[in-house]
Length: 405
Image (cartoon, rainbow, N blue to C red):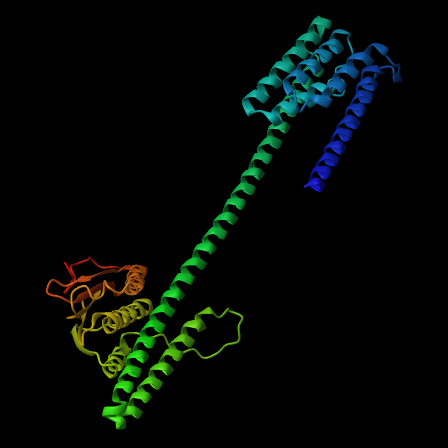
């Protein structure tokens, strides 16, 4: 911070030195222009021009802080020049021109040209008072032109600075917005991957736990089925590893080495999913209605995960041995209904099931659909979801079959 302050102080000191040097140069030029005699081709220093030139150039050092005050003093010195009869040259009135330029830079266009008109009128009027016979002198028209030019240049510089400042502000705003959007995308992707991992791990661990329980139960009664139960555990763990590998593969960067990726699951894998639940002791009655059409990949994955998580919750929390799955393919929407006949309040008694319901609702909302879940009037639990066949064109919502009321 101290280094920045020192650098800024040094820059201001250099600017003040440059302005002082410029004022000194204008002073010399003003005195020379006032003392020159163009008709006689000779130079005769006029000491009466030194004082107004010195005052008019000296006050320019404060033109940024007090632009109108400096303009008034410089204009007064210019009037003195005119009344003394000095040659009407832009160099003689240069402090006035610099002051008009400063006013134009630091104020608006109307104020700038008003100040220029007043300054030109005062100087021309003073020249006419000093020499009434010189109304048609070309120097007076030149004085008007030079004053207007100073105001125009100052207004142009002000407009340019305002434009550059606006461009920089828009660029900074765009950069901040870009960073914010990037953070939001990263957060959304992190939530999506966490939801995917939750569904994969919860489903397969629940199946492995159920299959291990079956194996323990069969040790004494039917030892010949132990091998089959262990094979089910092996197949389930292999499936879990495959899905984890496919999900983690989504985290690869664009410049990572290309590696084969397993396809993401969809409704085509529902029969295999139901078979895995059958082996874990949950019988699922599967009903399809309507004509199945190709789904958008995001909708296909969301539908599969909703079915998977719903049946996993039935297996873990409902205490039921059977469930019903209805897939209704409508004209523009897919309706998913999962029901069980477990005891009332079975799902609610397990807080862990809430994370799965939240994840299912997020999945449905991500593709433009809806999901409801709740207990059934006669006992059991219902999960009902409606997903558009194409996320960009959601159809009209309707009451899904089997929705809890």
